Image (cartoon, rainbow, N blue to C red; front, side, top):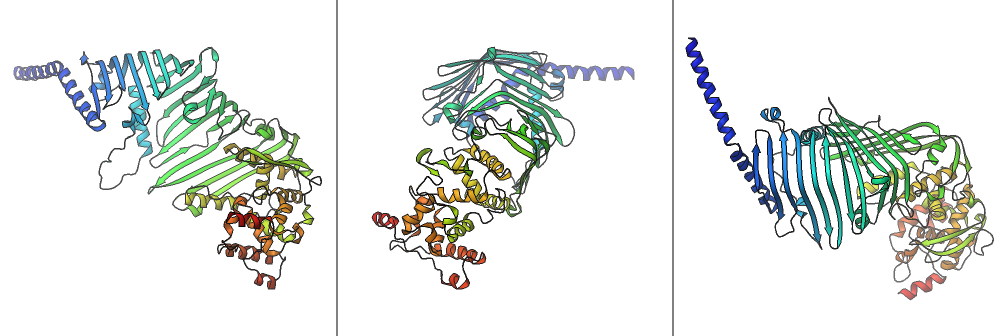
Length: 633
């Protein structure tokens, strides 16, 4: 019996050995077959020519590749590589997993070429026909990210040497080239020098960090040699922007369990950013740091409120969640910053971003609450809360601009497309200045009811109006409404008229809050200034010039119809002629506007019911405006 068992074992063992020997002897043929199949798929799908000199297994765990090239059809060569040796984890390979232990690469060249509108990399952005499925599958974010991270960490080698790596981007006559003479990985840690050539500018960068498969951790740091600033290439030519920094550092660690979690830190120091759409001056951030925790669910991604964002002296905990259901997104963002020293905010404002507030100093305490909740399946349910509260707050020292200057006579400059067109004083020394009590109450109330009916009661902001404007903008998918108050319009024109950029809205909000909270200018004086600087047509500024230009009257002499007409011009002062037909009659769409303002004047007691019933969308233009309108016909 024992002899039979021994014989069976011997036969089985012999068969296994024969199979293993056969597999070992045929391993290169199998590798070649797999490679050819995959290359054929790539060539057919993307119109490429992919080839190599040698491909074989050295032993059981080392893949050797020589003289690889990738050439898109009728395009410049995209990639060449002299040699690549990859050693795999044999035990993981037996289990069916690919895990890289060591990489040695030499002579990799990637060349991205674009001439006019033809590029040798445009196939990368070509849309592929989606695989047909009976029912659309919802994306599982946690599962996707988990797979990507798992693949990433398996492919990251514990040790390696990469020599003579060059990535070149050429567009017409411009060139950006990144050259890595040597990238060395030793026991999960790496370090490399990077030489950057952009046209005639040369930079020398250093990067170092850690790639740890065991702890699922990635850490990296980038800075310029000799501690000069890193200047990000390409974006100046492409976007007209400038981005420079001293040091950039990033770390990420994957956490086990559910939900899938990722923690880490992003840190930047000495950041300088310039783009005319952001600010007319370079924006400087001395220190910025994000210590984050991200949670991933099957249908949602969440930036946990344990996240801490710091810039300069200010720190707060943002919360962000994006969820998807039935192809509709639900977006939630919030910040709750309890009481903190006010000067932490104002001394942390990035230099160049808030030019009027540069150097401002404050005392007291602030607290901030923000919430934006947008369900794109139910836009009318949108929630918006933004509140900056103060306690014992005081401006100790103004910054670059005296924010109380509107309280007294000051010089106002009107701008068009960033260019000054007129400068005049807002006070008695200007011949066209009109005190508030010399302006018809009908005109005052018509404008107020058209632009900001609660002006004398709010503190610079109308959250409900901003919410409604945001809902409308999201529905029409463009910026169609602004939700601006008279204070916001006044600040924009008096302090920020020259600068039309994204930063202006942030600075506008802060200046409005400071003026209203500290009562730097009374409401009456603000409205008086507003009515004296408002534009009412080409180079027509203030109620005095408007009343004269349209009706040969003074602002105190205007009728109800005339007042409503002047109020209708303010949103688009240069296009007032569009309100008239060729025979100088107001167009039909003005009927609704006249009816609305008339009803509000009636409720405010400025007119009686008999007057209200008699008002029609009619106006008799008698001033210089009539000549201008007839000349254009």
